[in-house]
Length: 219
Ligand SMILES: [Zn+2]
Image (tube, rainbow, N blue to C red; front, side, top):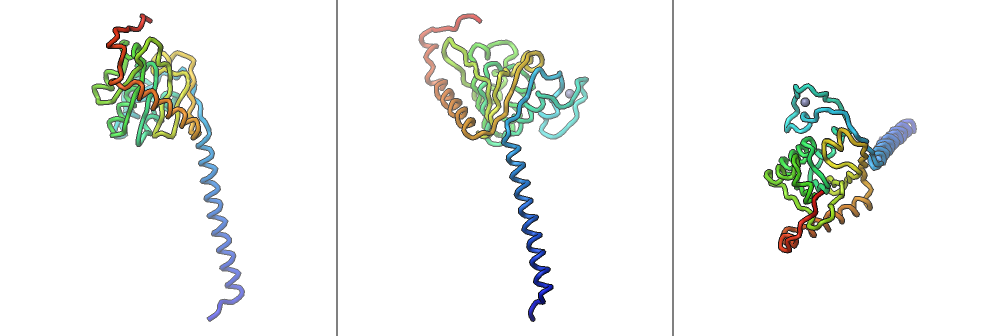
C-alpha cells in the first residue's frame, strides 16, 4: 500500500514542525546557558535579615524577629550552599556566623571544603576558623608578616566569587562592598591556580616562622 500525495505532505509538515520545535528548544537552552555565563554583581551593605532557614538540612521555618527576605547576603549564602563537589574559600577575615554557617553546612553534606585565611585575623574574637577546625575543615594560613588579603571563593571549581567583601558582619551589614560572580573559564582557572599555589605554600609541614621565632607586628 502506497501513501497518497496528501499523506506525504502531511508527514513532511509534521516532520518540519517537529524539527522547528526541537530547534527552538535547543536555541532557548543556549540562550539560558549564555545568560547564566554572564557575570553577576552583589552590592553591600545588605539589610539585616535572617538566613538561618537556608542553612537547615530540611526546609524549615524560623520564628526569629528578623526579616527573612532575599538580600545580597542570602544570595551569597545560596551560592556557597550550592556547592556539590568542592568549596575553596580564600578570605582575609571570616567572622560572619551566617557565611560561616553556610560553609559548615556544605562541609556537613560531605563536600570537600578548604579554607585559606590570614593568620592574624583568624585569631580575632568572633573568627569562624576555630569552629571550622572543630568541625574537621582544613584551614591553612599565611606564614609571614604580610596579610593574606584575598577575598574570593570557588564553587565546584567552576564559579568564582570575588570582590572587596570580607566575611564579617561589619563588611556585610555596614560597609560599601562589592562581590562579582564569574563563570569565565580563564578567570576561574587563574583563581584556581592561585588557590592551589597558596594551599601548597601554606602547607603546615612547611611552616618556618614558628621555628625562627618571627611574629607579626600588632595591627
Ligand atoms: Zn530567622
